[in-house]
Amino acid sequence: MRSYGTYVDGHERPSDKWVYTVHSSAMLRDTMGSVRLKRGLERGRIAPEAATDDVVGRVAVGDGHDMDAALHVAAGAARAWSAVPPAARLRVVEEFHHLVREKSAEIIDVMVAEGHPRMLARWEVAGMLANTGPETREWIAGQMEHRRRLGPRELTLRRVADGVVCLNPPQNATVANALLGIWVLAGGNSLVVRAPRSAPLGVMHALHELIVPALERAGAPPGVLSAICSPAGPALAQWLDSPLVDDIMYFGDSEKGIAFGAECVARGKKPVLELAGNDIVVVWRDADLERAADALAEAFYGSGQICMVPNCAVVHPAVADELLGLLADRARAIRPGLPDEPEALLSPVLRTDRFFEVLRQATDGGGRLVCGGRRLDVHGEADDMNGVFLEPTVVRVDGLKGARDLDVVRHETFFPLLPVVVPEQRPDTELLDAVMAFTNANEYGLRNSLWAEDEGVIAGYLAAVRGGGLLKVNDSHIGFLPLLPTHGGTGLTGGPGGEANFPLLRTTHLQGVSVARGVLPRQAVFGDARAEAALPGDQNERKRH
Image 1 (cartoon, rainbow, N blue to C red):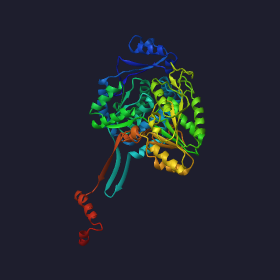
Image 2: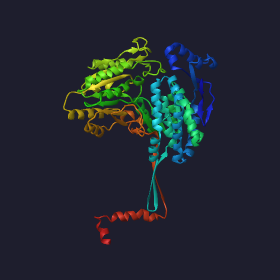
Image 3: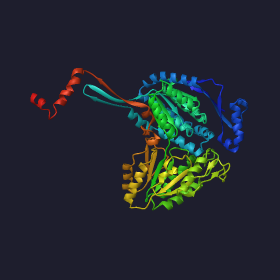
Image 4: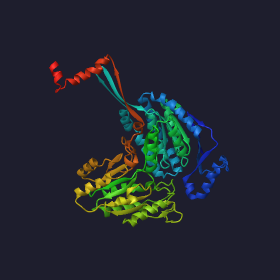
């Protein structure tokens, strides 16, 4: 059994309270028995040495005293770490990249144990590698400092660390999102991570096995990283109250996140918000429909409980019927299974009432159910009473007008539920304008993508669509790429300051520096003013000359 304590100042702190992780496959095979085992261990009725092999790990639960210690240590370490040259700090990312590659199988196994389908865990690790590869590191390094000599001055525009950054990962994709903190550290900040009590093992494993050794290899002071498993509410309140905290990276739903961001600003802290997505995929009449259907089927991966999957498709009416047939075939082929099964792509959905409410509103509002719409058991059989999986579901919605009156179109549903909006017939030029307007009217802005071959359509799309942190054309919607950001967005996705998110850039700030030799201050103040006064049109200056 893996065991991780609260991590502060390079050491694990003692605890008498633990959260235990029972392997997700055991939870699906025998839910009640696994829950009794987990609760027995956490309440002290079962001794740790009596745990079965299904118990894969435990994480210590920290408290406010642990958090306070972490923040004080982080503040002191940030001062020393930010003074280290950027190139030396970026070595942390390089070492992290090598460790992820070396330990990828181990990372995947831990994520599977916590419930990630194996194929999706592999995708998340691929994202870690793309996000920290040599191309991305080189590009980010080029953003950290620019120097230019002008006469007697050396002018520098540089990015300076904000200080202490606290990171609150979501309950889904906890590991990948917590590991975005590697870039926070490379920016010269200290990092305090809250591991969610619902899924702490993957986060603590990744921090202990990947980031800690990367920091050690780069010579960072131990206090730059702390990790504490604790409830969200008290931790967030403590961060808001603490004068030591500079930035808070918050992952969550849009309504709570926007309000939390406003509270951060009111308390003098920078919010970095990663909230909901409601991504739109446009499929034009000349698209490669087979590939477009493959990309749209990504909507069902992880049962739609991934913020960056497609949430709505807008399909040219000339190809809508054919595309819907292809998409339905792909949806029916995605089946439930235990997380460690090699082809499993669906995750359990614990609260399904909202799914059926949204689906019913869509069909009552004129939408047509194309496929799906049932609860399934782990074997893929319909089970309306006890099924913990939802069948991949496609709903056709005819007409752009009124489509956003349906919650399934207007908001992120976080279910394996994809609405396909088919616009009204009209000339292609008018139709493209209407589709672009529909896309831009989206209140969210994580990712948007297009499937088309016509270069004019592609150019028009790229010129018109301003929302979203990432635009993709004729590509996987969720696939990771070097150089481009994995997170970030506009509107309800990132709040008023939302944009494509490179965590190093978001948790640092621009600073201008001038180092002069032989400059006369009075001449520097008034000399340029006299030169400006000599511009054409200044009659007095012309007379003097």
